[in-house]
Image (cartoon, rainbow, N blue to C red):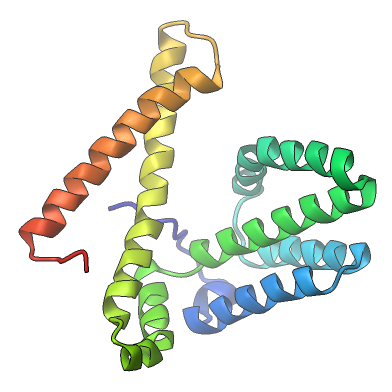
Length: 199
């Protein structure tokens, strides 16, 4: 399967996945608990600096932002209407900072390392009857599924451009949804064949 991981030799690539996940969690809590625009802006700036440290090409950063701008715009419009410009700016900055940081963590950490770290963190859940290995496996499977969906979306766009189809969200969404459901069904059958229970 494909992975979100981007090979590299930066400090962030060499850092263990566990601490990076902790930083992501702490940052999520901080930007929502500290209701200050300057603090959220600083967090966003730090994330951009970390992207530079990771030596990930700026075109990848641009690609991430390009995929987020529609969501950010819709959130901004709603927040301006409901709560004013300050809250709109806070919401958009939070969204961009957290999603770009999450992308950075997955791009500098192998999926297997993330799964191992999550399994270790989830071990206390075994005391209440939950299975840490299964939880980590499902999260890892989700992480591997994301680039597959992105790849299928790019294939559909390329095919539509070749046929002269205009770039419309609905024209992309319907075939992408069908392909995603087909992939999910195939994965489900593969898991059933290997005796992976859903409960």
